[in-house]
Length: 453
Image (cartoon, rainbow, N blue to C red; front, side, top):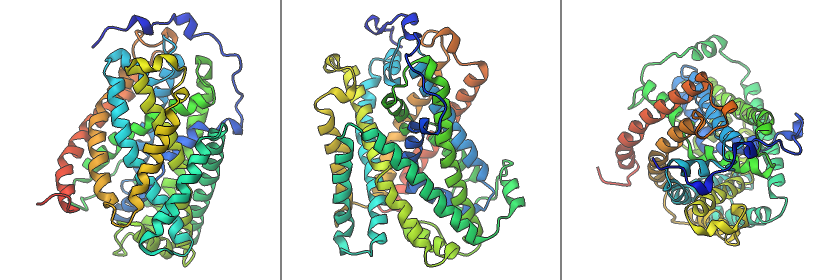
């Protein structure tokens, strides 16, 4: 562990100075947390909740609550460091540099790779929705033809001065439409097994229904969600609102909770719809086609349209928000690791920022929509598994160390014992889940045909 770089030192009193204006608790104060939540809600969330509901009914629903709780506490701790650290650091990346000077460059490189993979997945999801929503025209080139306008609109949105305001409004609209779509589906289903749902909240572990132990899968899910690299995006979204002082902590906590609640509601709705329609029917949820079939069973002919609408909205919420966030994170790491950053107050002030954001996180992902492009499953299984295995320990252990020590935090804002305990449990589960990632990576690649058996 390296000694703290004197150049990074800032008086604690300076870091604790009151901000000129702290926003009031109003509905319009909600923004960064909801933008972050909508970046999480991709096809992975939809398919994961659908598969769990279809395979296990309500029995593993407690894992959703615990996983989102782990994500909330981890992100809250990340935000806490930004607002209440001893040095006035404006990002967690600066804190990581205090632990080890090599972390900023490590994260700059890993976020470049991880960001391109994740962006490809979200662009693909968005083009799938648009392709089906507007008549499935274009043949093999259909997804690419829809990908081009998404890329152009995203570029135009993110190069405007009011980009983040547009992201906030798109996230609000998307959350309302997606909640409404699945709430309507649940209304049409017309029934909920309340006793089974209640049992599903009591840490019940069902008999295994697949190649892996159910509890093992649950623990792995909780750990990887809590330690997701995307959690690091929140401080950059906070910066767009100017939340940078200890006095902003209450409004930040309100914002994060307000953003996580729609995410919880959407996942619960999807899970319940799958449990009530697919469980016991023989249908296996494995792709967007089977999701459309599930929605047909729940709602009727309009069901797939609601699903494609939800997917299409992802093209204008997650895709631009994550392009902006991953670029900020990559340049933050690059600037902290090199002398290049000395001349810029913010990562986005770098003249290469927009060029790199457009090239790596907007245009490169378009390749996944081309005819004959590599299967998205191949890229996602290998790329996200490897990057998650690399970043999970430093993210979780780093957050725990930074927020639990007076060396890094203002005295009044060091974690309480129970906050440290919660973060320690999340870190332990996250490290344990690494075994699931590494043990399952080889077999998963064999199953999808990426490597020979």
